[in-house]
Amino acid sequence: MMPYIHQFAGFLRVHLTSISVGLVATLLILYGSYINDYFKRITKSLPFVVRFALFVVLCSVGYAFASSQLVRLLRLGLRQLSDFPLICVVIGSFVLLAFLAKREKDI
Picture 1 (cartoon, rainbow, N blue to C red):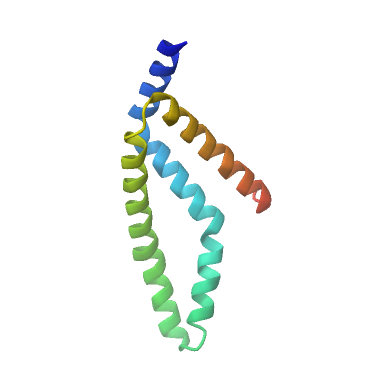
Picture 2 (tube, rainbow, N blue to C red):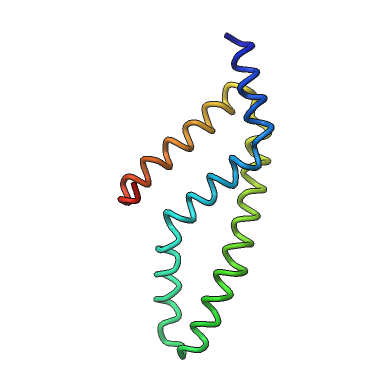
């Protein structure tokens, strides 16, 4: 059984960047509207043009920076795991995101 676990973990390690992007992108899809709503609340008192400019900056710079850094940190964290924990964390993360998506009624 160990050769199969090692082989599957090796497959996952080759694709850690894609796995990390998938996890972070799914989190942003699920919770991006909450971030936008919060941002809208805290900038409510500002003029429309300023709010619009800040929203553009949030989307173009904020989300891009946050996602790139989260992907990098997640990939580094996953890379340090040994074979069996890596498999469990990757599968568990995607299952957890599926439950969160179901709870948010995105599925």
